[in-house]
Length: 195
Ligand SMILES: O=C(CO)[C@@H](O)[C@H](O)[C@H](O)[C@H](O)COP(=O)(O)O
Ligand SMILES: [Zn+2]
Image (tube, rainbow, N blue to C red; front, side):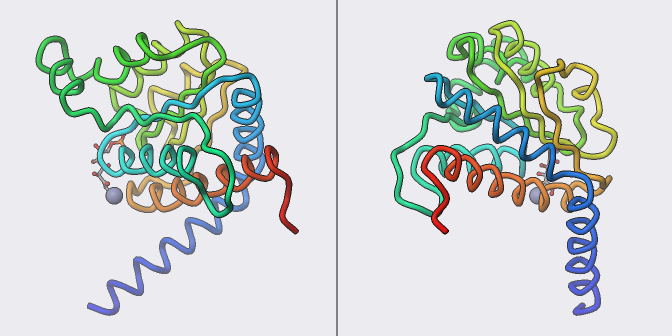
C-alpha cells in the first residue's frame, strides 16, 4: 500500500509543479480584486460542494478569524454552512438555488464571490455566478479540467484560477494552496509585509 501512497504524493507534487507554471498571475490578480473589494467596504462570499464546501469555509474562517498574523477580522461568509437555509431552499425550490438565493439576499455591489468547483459544472455554483453578476459582484472562480460551464460565464473583470488537472482530489489540493496564497497576499496588501 505504500506504493499507492507514494503514487498519490508524487501526483500531488507533479500537479503543484504544473500549476506553479501557470497560476501565479491569476492568483495575484484575484488577490488584487479581493483587496480592492475589502478596501471599499465589500465582503467576500464563498461557495462550493463537498470538499470545495470545505474550502469555501476554510477561506471564510481565515478571513473572519485570521490567517498567520494578528490583524483585524475581515468580512467573509461561506454560503455552505446554514443547513436550515440550504435544506429549505433545496426542498422548496431546487438544490441548484441553494447559493444563488442567499446571494440575492446578501450580495451587494462591490462584493466578491469565490466560486469553487473542480469540474466547473456544479449547477448550484453556476447559478451562484449568475446571481452574483446580477448583484454587480465580481467573481473569483477556482476551477479545474476545462473550466466547465463556469468558464464561459466569467466577465472581463472576473478571475479564473484553473488548475491544470482532471483529477478532483489533485485539483482540490491546489485549490487549498491557492486559498492560502490569497490569504497571505491579502494580509500583505492590507497590513504590510512582515519581512
Ligand atoms: O472532495 C471530494 C473529492 O475529493 C468530493 O466530495 C467532491 O467535492 C464532490 O464530489 C463534489 O460534488 C464535486 O463537485 P465539483 O468539484 O465538480 O464542483
Ligand atoms: Zn476531497
